[in-house]
Length: 390
Ligand SMILES: Nc1ncnc2c1ncn2[C@@H]1O[C@H](COP(=O)(O)OP(=O)(O)O)[C@@H](O)[C@H]1O
Ligand SMILES: [Mg+2]
Image (cartoon, rainbow, N blue to C red; front, side, top):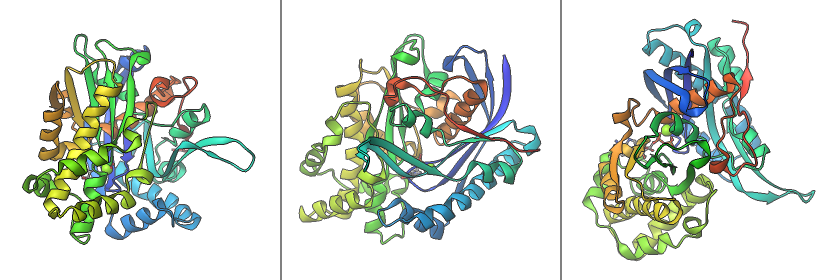
């Protein structure tokens, strides 16, 4: 049984900030289910509004190479600071930490193969926040840029969290679904006693992204999300807008599939808000309907794409903090909705913990993609190692 202390760093499509989890990870050498994790600390560092704005621009169609070039280094620094803070919060020094596993910040994700001038059609994805910057700033070996290895063997490079779901959530008797609700919502179906080749995973569609987008527009940027579901709780879901939105072809296209800000970002939120206003809906009704869109697209995806109706749905990500969303989800699924916190990892921390686990597998030389989830042609060891002299 080997044991390491690894800090996982994650910033998702919400662009809200960096999550850092300091984890003690032990492994018996038997694959994803042989990992055991104890979270020693968890901290979140918010991006400043100016930084978030620059980042949002870099993610949009106007984003240029200059923005990406600068942000690659700047985000590396923000991530490094978050790692040092997580070590501090765990009461350890960087010298006590074996490695950092950093997801970075996605600024582009193109899961649909794009035709190149030479005739090739390729998927691509780009996470910035350079591993060398993190390694040199912290003095801790850093593993980053996980998704590219999966892309290189024809995968989507997403979702990557199923590896961690196998480690954390498989039950001997119950069929479970790990449901993360970040900017995008993604699920991993874990049949009872599942092994790696028995999982189904997919991005179900928007998580908080459409809710955040309409709230930002409604409040003139005064609010970036619907805190505790307060607006949604005061509105009424408009069934006709909800049904029209559920016609979106992404929801019926079969897995493997992944999506992002390119599809459900600002442009989508603007159109959603105008469609609501054309129907005479109040701002609260629009937010309630955006919240219902997330819940229903998740429930529909279970019916369409999962091998069996889950007994339990384990919710993680920022969406777990939105009680209206969790209640709507509870209404549309048959199984019991539970929060990740009940399983020793807080709902907010799970994705950061996942990148600590993925980095641990990189160091162990264990393939850490799940081809059934990403559509890759074979298992690969994802992640690039940036060594330090420390
Ligand atoms: N108290 C809360 N009430 C409602 N929504 C929340 C709350 N806290 C966080 N969220 C939502 O969670 C999002 C961040 O979730 P997160 O899991 O960090 O997503 P990502 O992985 O995309 O960064 C926020 O943008 C917000 O929409
Ligand atoms: Mg986040």
